[in-house]
Amino acid sequence: MALFDCTCEATSGNARALSYETAHGTFRTPMFMPVGTSATVKGVTVRQLRDLQSQVVLANTYHLSLRPGADVVAEAGGVHAFMNYDGPMLTDSGGFQVFSLADTLKLDEDGLSFSSIYDGAKVRWTPEENMRIQEQLGADIAMQLDQCTPYPAERDFVARAVDLSANWAKRCLAAHKRPDQTLFGIVQGGMELDLRLESIRRLREIEEESLAAGGRRFGGFGIGGYSVGEEHEVMFQTLGPVARALPEDRPRYLMGVGNPTTLVRAVREGVDMFDCVLPTRTARMGTAFSSQGRMNLRNAKYTRDFTPLDPACNCPTCRNHTRAYLRHLVKQNEMLGGILLSIHNLHFLLDLMRRAREAVLADAYEDFYAEWMASPAAQDY
Image (cartoon, rainbow, N blue to C red; front, side, top):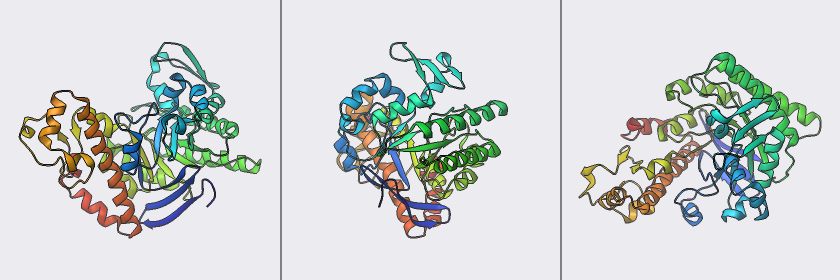
């Protein structure tokens, strides 16, 4: 298979099982991407990621461009060599981080200006500069620079963001040249279905114009601007039609979502890829995913509970440590507690998507979905 070829191996209803070729190997969907914002998944080593059978790791352009700097990462041989991870990687454009720091943001048609969270230095990004930085970082997948809207937001504001994101998508696609890296476009539009469909129409028009001029197409599509404060039921009012309006021959990536039940539901709607800091962030707070629902290890009921964290799980944490020991680590603020719970939570989501893929391949996703939705875990997420 050629670089960035996407093969649909099976469907089950709207759920899909894809394989996607990158310069650092093939990844298969449905899949969850651990977030390694600053070229590290917090508390988890590269070897542990491999042992967990993680496929794609996400790093963040905003943070890496500020520290240690994209030039440093490039000098190291790119983000793979810098962190010694030899699997596929994706860099978020950093747009979400910039727009979440609205107090320092100045936005215009040509780009955006902001202050570094590290030292207050003034930074200017155009779509072209963002592409240059992501090419320096060298992940297998880069994301376009876009404007992410909050929730709630006025329709006129969301419509302007769709227009700006489309204009920037065109410039990103024209500027992006690195042959061993592909670029994903991003769908915006808030909770307005017609605006999201317009965003998709614009992205498809942009790549048609690019191809007609001898340029490139998008390697896949991110679905941005969800999980920004709205109830998940609000998201699901439009997510399915949005996902299914995207091209069938490339991955659909729901950005920033890591709730287990949301993943299971979104796969059913036709989504292929996910990322979120939720599994590691909640782990550092002493919370674990489990087949019985969310577990707060600070709870006193685990003080003398010498059973595995989740008897249904075969991750290293569950194989080797008890709830009582994990609670002890959490209560003592021992860093090992967050590490062990991060390993477990990542395994939980990675394994959930592995089982989802098996269900698609067996054309039994509806059964898998019904079983999950009837489980104790589903009622707690």
